[in-house]
Amino acid sequence: MLNSFDYGGKEADTVHALEEDIIFGRLAPGTRLVEDVLLARFPVSRHAIRQALYQLERLGIVTRERNKGAMVRRLSPEEVRQIYEVREMLQRQAALMIPLPAGDALIEELMRVHRVYSSHVDSGYLRGIHEANDRFHLTMFSACGNAYLVSSIEHYMRLSLPVRANSLADREKLEISRQHHAMMIEALQRRDNWVLAQLCVDHLQPSKAFYLQEIETKASGG
Image: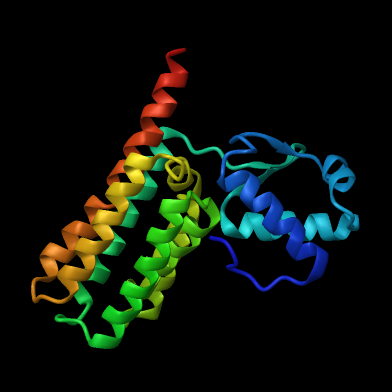
């Protein structure tokens, strides 16, 4: 997710520019990231380019293959299904562990982030939508009290970035996401963890289904 690492100077600019290109679809899955091409684009050293690619690999949106170099991560349908199976298990468990009803401080912070998210949805600001969405979920899941579980959730959120980002410009899916966030806040103020857990699982489905449908459409030549 954006701003997950503390970079410095021109390297930070390189990482963030490439990250946005990948997350927001300007660099398609499978695109090779050739060092010489990147050097022509960014006023940095080869070392800085390699460090940027390394950081993007850590984020899970770039892969490296022997004799092929770095490329934008491409997820197969089976990889998508497996990643989302793990995400569903992790997020369900975290939701079940959150003490309910949640405290006022957590509700107020989630409402604040939700307002930011909504404003970005209304304005169509993709980076803001992406960052506020991740902040909302990590803030909520942190209330489960298990830092290792939250770290695992964050890791699989990174792995699914190509899937999630595919829906960022889809207004209908963003409206569903906004409704889900509001419903989660309401559920947090009640006492039924199972309702909250199911909401967290249901929230994952639209972007996964959309990505898989896109893959199947391309595979069939549609």
